Length: 171
Image (cartoon, rainbow, N blue to C red; front, side, top):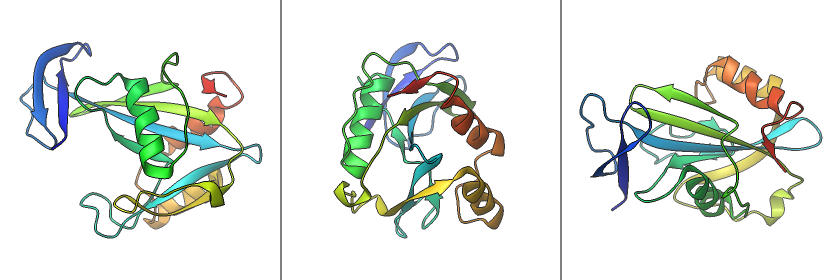
């Protein structure tokens, strides 16, 4: 069973560890990471979640996402999830997230990676990912409007694409 570190509102570990999905007390938070891979054609690698996934079944999502496990830093969690979900290796040990979004139960760290990737070389995690493809910002925003993409705030998608030319991107 996966376990998560619990953080306070200042993102300091409290020393408490809880099983995945446990109800957190007021003032307790957990860490989630996302990696967004962009290519030279100004497209993002997106993934379609499996139909049997508890959260957001069949919807499309950014390249990868998941919770940091107990003892993991944000960068370690990002590298692990990227390798697990699509079989792609990247080292984030010396990287900070491009940005963080606070949500009611935690912190969403977003890493933005610029890379040329052959989709045929990826190994999809059957328990998580049913499909991957490249999509432009406009396509993703249209998918959000249609309800076929996880309903991120449009400004989050804009920021991911805007950051590729303004720093904060892992290459």
